[in-house]
Length: 179
Image (cartoon, rainbow, N blue to C red; front, side):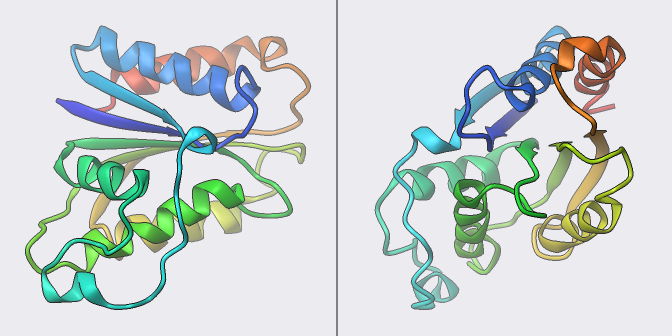
């Protein structure tokens, strides 16, 4: 199975990145192929709402998002990892997620699969449950027709190495991703 992993934090080696890497290790150990993208390293423009994609043509914006959104559409699974900044995912990740409009609304592209989500934040676990529930529904279930098979909520951070159970949880979720 092919899985695309999106690291939404602009900080490499951050808690978000460490947890994502653990989930990726579990997925690879289960025999899956995983391609990881650090979203802040990509050249991605915001959607222009031109509607070209709804006519069965590719997005008119020829940037990294065009390639990655098509890879997501072809993959069996998706892992999205993001810190919650100011109550939401990072801006860089949001721009890429918005660009998925071009594949979800293209009548020539069939989009479905499974998704796992990782959220890191400074609040207590459960603090962002409403936001996380909304993220599961929109865009992943409603627009992308994905099955949400796991959510890892890691709050009260500091170093994630101080929460070794979360590292184990991430690895085990990755290992069971496509079960």
